Image (cartoon, rainbow, N blue to C red; front, top):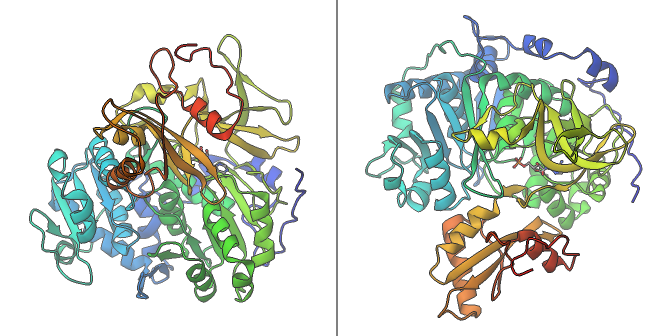
Length: 584
Ligand code: AMP
């Protein structure tokens, strides 16, 4: 269906990216780097660019983070505050013996201490890794084990619920720092009090020389098979975080910016922590979970000017009705953006109906580290399209030739895999400890994204689907293997296959198919037991919502469950090539 275009809204603010083509021609990564300061002795460090640079200049007293607590508390942190608090945290890490490159994990939810921990870790040359607080113990254990977590910052509640039971298995973990809740000191054996340590630490810290290629971030993502993959990002990535925030989100220093993503996922770090700080603006951080009324209130009361959110949230707001939005005034709001899943054309248009502004879709992934394709503020929008590549980014549609070589497809609207020419600063540098899995993502200079897409005659990219079986549910990327493995732990389960089943709100729901071992009978009680087991081990986001018993699961002759076939049968679609099916 053709949804036409939406003309760019009139804006009183001059856009950072004016004419797309001429900006693209004149862009260079060297010039982008020159917008940042670099460390006094050379090199580049994310925390220096995000806070110390501003703390020693005119923006020192400007509010960097305005935190909205779940119960109504409000706390403000200026660039100076963040610089000093993160210096204290860096001193704490040094005192605890953290060596360069060692990993500091945070499992906290959106609280101010998370932001301080991230910045302090970068100052101390540690590697920061956030975990989504809605994960259950198993995804947490797997991610901490792969990254050899040395230090963990968490809250008392999350420690008791999710860490205490797995701590003994985390052999690399040396210290757990607990953020006490309701102002109280924690009372947990074998842990340290985050606040007490911070209070005792000195508030000055000189960042040691940091190379642009030093590892700074570890972000986990999921594949179709095997364990989660730890995508490694480096300090030099900050150049791209900064410039993509400036160009794709049109961030200006006077903005009040609200990125609704949780820092447990890459958007919440690249655009929830780093890009807004390097751009010197005020970020809203809301501790609470989605609530349509609350979100409308925040947009109005906090005078949000740039809002970066996700399709599932937009769809939930659409369900709550445009009247809720129209009942409020938001004179400051000027740019709406969305990422994480395909954004329906209806949702783009609904933005105009409800807020007087369209949503601008953009595309990227954990591996790319920053926005790669976007609908820019200065361009007309094609609803349903992801937009055009960022300056400095070369994107193409590729297909494998019959000899396995890569062919760039130039014919407009041909489908193929979306590929990006290597070399931008925030591209992942490795999957931790898995060089082979990393190597397989590339063909020559091209990084293969695993997404299928097409490009129209005017250069707009359109998302078609995933090449693999990875599931997107409510914006979260879930690996079916991780879910299947937990189901297989249950004594009744012989085989498990997990698929994403289309859902109007969450995009996909996790559905599992289970074959039982001899001696177990399918029934409602066992179904509930299996779903509860998965929920307890995986957490609500990752656990399947539906379960179906089967006598046998369709498998290849080599014994691999054919998820593709499970999905085709579930949706009543053609089964495609079944020549490798067992028994065929
Ligand atoms: P993650 O690594 O968790 O950020 O997930 C990245 C994946 O989300 C991409 O490879 C796409 O499959 C999907 N994705 C992200 N942004 C978009 C978008 N704007 N439209 C469609 N799919 C998207």
